[in-house]
Image (cartoon, rainbow, N blue to C red; front, side, top):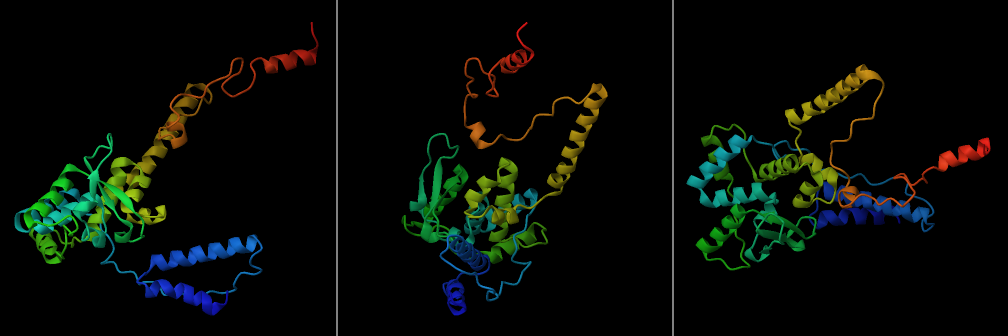
Amino acid sequence: MSGRRRKRVMDRPTGEGARGQSIVKDVQALKRGLRIAKRRGSLHQLPDEWPKLRRDPPNERQRGKLHPVAVMMAWLGHLKRHAPEAWRQASTAVRTGLRAEELRKVRWDWVEEAPAGSGVPKLLRVPAWAAKNRRERAIGLTPEVEAFLRTARAQDGLSDETPLLPGQHRKAFAAAAKAVGHSKSITLRDLRHCHATWAAQGTGDAAAAQAALGHTDLRTTQRYLSSTLARTASAAVAVGKQLDRGREMGAVGGVGSAEPNCHTRPSYQANSGAPRSVLPGRSASGEARGSSRTSLTSARGTP
């Protein structure tokens, strides 16, 4: 592949509207493909240099911020009293984690029944054409979010194919933040950031937050997971407790068995159901019982 052709491949996403991380990931995928082709013998030599990509400059104002829960509840309460449409949009955003462009496209025909035992009455199935990464995903809808969407559909008399939460409400968001005495602005990006952080804290599962946010790479999700002071301090506390246990075990006398892992077991163990069956005459490790004794006896000779 010539340098001019590589440049065309990398410039194509820019012409289609892709920016920032999307272009960088496409280039990384192209490099991985070329390395695989070289290992398989389809390519004799990798390119010595690559055209430089101009990344988007960092903008602190556009980066998602984590706001206190008390401030968020007061802010939503002010919106509910003074701007009901903005309140429905903001409440749906913080409870679903949808991107701003996805939020404004939400339609009633995306709502479907949730399977039994899922914990939510409805699912919101975001189609591939409306998602940023062009991949379909399903999001759980709590009764509150279902009520928001149903109210918007009934009050405005909208059809199933009409967006339920359109419009820009930046002025209403800013006025509500000023009314509750919050010095920082609250945007739809912030609401998505708060959803990701609280979802990870509540479930302890970053992969669940990744699926809800629609990220293809877990590292992208980790950028949204703000590390609070309590979570950071808990790491040092956990290490201190482990050292205290070791000190106590040494004081009792000798080194005992290690403390069992208190974290969640791997999925292949958690889903296994019953413990592994043990064959007759064998131990749990798979060795034949008495095999060591038999070998020792044969080595010494029969008495």
